Amino acid sequence: MNTNTKIAVIIVAAGRGTRAGGTLPKQWQPLMGKPIIQWSIDTFLENSMVNEVIVVYHPDDQNLMKQISNGVQGVLGGATRDASVKCGLNQLEISAPDYVLIHDAARPCLDQKLLSECINAVLIKGAVVPALSLKDTLWRGKDYVTEILDRNEMFCSQTPQCFSFPLVLSAHSQTTMLATDDAQIVQSTGHSVAIIPGNEDNIKITGPEDFVRAERILRGNMKLRVGNGFDVHRFGPGSSLTLCGVIIESSLALIGHSDADVGMHSVTDAIYGALARGDIGQHFPPSEQQWKGADSRVFLEHAVHLTSEMGFKIENIDCTLICEQPKIGPYADEMRSKLAEITGLDVDQVSVKATTSEKLGFTGRGEGIAAIATAALISR
Image (cartoon, rainbow, N blue to C red; front, side):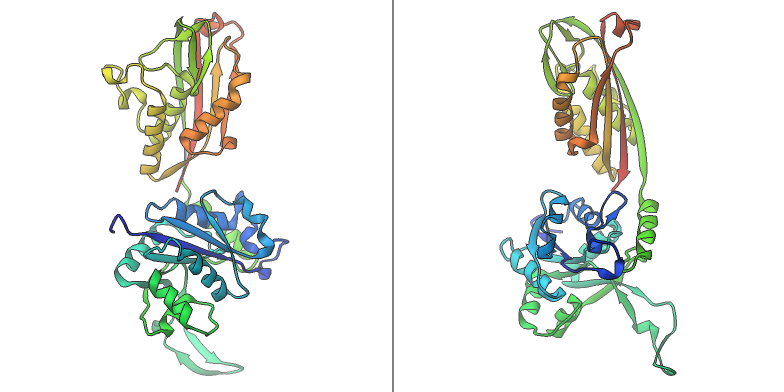
C-alpha cells in the first residue's frame, strides 16, 4: 500500500435495533464492559492502515456518543440506512480519502485478520464485500417447495463493505433506489463488486440471543497476559527524586544509572514480563554510557511500542511504592496521569499507591525505595 493512501471508515449507527430488546438501541447496549459499537471502533482505530473513523448516529443518541473514543467524528444520520451512509460520505468529502469502509455498528466481532484482508482486496479491486458461502440447500416456495436454488451462487453478505471513495460517493449521488446494502448501490451503476471470504464469527447482533454468542466469540478471541515488575533504588545525596515521572522535592535523591525512577522501572518491567521480553537491563544495558541519567520515559515508551508491535494493548497498570518517605498520597494522581499519558491509557486504568514496611528492612530504615507493579495486556 502506498504510504500516502488514505482509508476512512463509516460506522452506521443511526438505526434503532428494537428486535434486540433492551432500553437502548442495540449498538449502545453494553457488551463485556463497553458499548457494542466501541468494539468495532477499537478494531478500526488499532489498525495502522485506517486514517479516519466516522460514526453516523441518530439525533436521539447525542448523549450516548459521549461514551466513545476520542478521535472519532460523529455525524447525524438520515431516516434510512442509505441516507445515513450518504451523510457519512458527504462528511468525508472534506478529507477526501482514497477508500472508505462501511461497517454495521452491530457487528462487534470484526477481527484484524478479516479487516486487513478487506483492505488489501479493495486496494486491488476497488469494490469488495466479505461474504459467507451457504452450506444448506435453499428452497423457494410458500406452503410447498416450488424451486431449489443453486447455493453455490448464494452468499450472506457481511461488513465492512469496501470501496474506492470516488466510486461509492458517485454511486450514492446517482441512485434514487432504496437499498439496505452499499454493494447493491455500487453495482447498480455498472461497477462490479468482488466477493472475498468472510468470517463466521463476524456476526451481526439482531436478537437477544446474539449477545451471548458475541460475548463467547470475543472472549474466545482474546488473549490475556499478565506480568509483574520489581525494582529497588537506594537513597543518596540530592534535593529531589523522580517517581512515576513526577519530580518531588526531597532532602534525598534516588541513585541509579538512569534517573532512578523506581516506580516507572517496575511498571516497564511488568510490561516486558507480560510480553516475555526480559527486563530494562536487557533492552537498555547499564554498561552503555548513553543511558546514564536517561529519562525513564524512554524505557516505558519502548515497552509500550513493543506491546503494540506484538499485537497486544495494555489494559491496566497497578504500581505500589514501598517507602517511609516521601509521602506518596499528595502526588499519586499526578503520577497516574503521567503514566497514563505515556502508555496511552485512561487515568482510570492506572493505579499508583503506596505502603510502608512497618520500619522493617531497608525501606523501613529509610535507605531506599522499592516498587512492585503489575500490568495486564490483552490481544488487539
